[in-house]
Image (cartoon, rainbow, N blue to C red; front, top):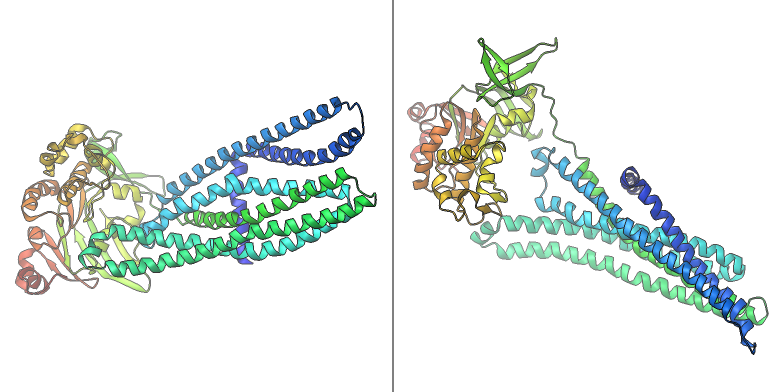
Length: 619
């Protein structure tokens, strides 16, 4: 019962897309479908008229006059032509309507996806999400452009044909209705099973796509650990499930139409036999029998079409349910009201400006209507911060730290100790369970997320480059940056040298996340992107992990220039890169167990000392 309610809600929601944007076009579609169905019924009725009123009277006539017959045929031909035009009109309009609706749905999906929190993407495979954009949207396309018009046309045709059959002969109509009842039971049984397995097929297809995407991304790892056989076994299992559900769905779907047609043929024979008896007794004319036999076909064939299209409608509704589930996902909450603005100094006071001056300030509106400005300095403090991805799994315990303006703070510890999690909290990719995180003395929950993240530059361990030129990829952090600023940022990151040796230099187009570039070169572009951003706070999450030792020395000089005068958070496994940090935090199982600069921690001869000297493995 609950599933039926959900499907009804999904169907009504789809109809809203039609009536809010394509009300007039859809009305024309309905009129055209009705006219097309009526033209079909009039054609059948014409058979009776043609035989009884024109052909039979002419059979015994020595000098037959065919003019009236030709005139009737011409009139009927005109009606058929108009019916064909109506069919073309509603099919053409439904293509426009369906593509327009899908365009709107895809836009809504993508725009809403940009508002979703990182948590959403962490809990779902990319292949599963992509399956919603491809398979589910395609199922919806087929439903809107084909299934719905065919079903509606079939229903209109069946109603008009049924009325015509009753006006022709009640007894023969009752025979047809009896056969239809049998067809309905068969259709419900076969169609119900088919629909259930078609829905399962869509879900299994989503799992297969998700697994393929996951294996493609991790192909190197699969080969390094010789995991090919285990990977194939897992894929075979998922693929077998898809094959099974697809085979069951199509088995029921493929036998549905033949069963319906054969029952219809049986009804056709019964009507012919009974009609012949009635004709011999003078109750029916030959024309009536011929027309009624056509009525039988015109009535049973649409019923078979409806039964077959129901599967596609159910698949589409299931896909639409997943689409709307994505659209209805709760967006990332942002209750901040403190914003980041460009500023300048006038008479010793901070004044907001539209120009990019290099001076940024926090704009803080107060309840009494006052607006105050505070210079962005880059001081970050954690006070007894507790965080867990779920309330039952806490990963950070009572984290307290202070990063002063211009300080370089490094995090060290084993994988899973919570280093990257801390930097994710500064960005508010996740919200904490308790405690406070302050940025220049302002609770970050009061700062708008977009402004908070605009003040933070990031270089991640995993580089993400986009299809476009080298110049466009560096400019991703600041779309309004000039070419000269792009070149300066590349030089600062020591990326200028290799870029100039590319075929088209800065205008070289890269695809597939930087195919053709080495991992180190991709990382240099990521560093150049952060340099162009020129944010007052930098987060470097294993920024040089993919660069060899020689390249690292080249980059380090540029990194030092980049970090100068900024608050910097560094996560690094190579402890040699963090020796000059002002503050080093040693984490273990979500707790800070040691803190101090390099010399202080070496003097303590604790965990850091063991990590630095190699007595303790960092992993």
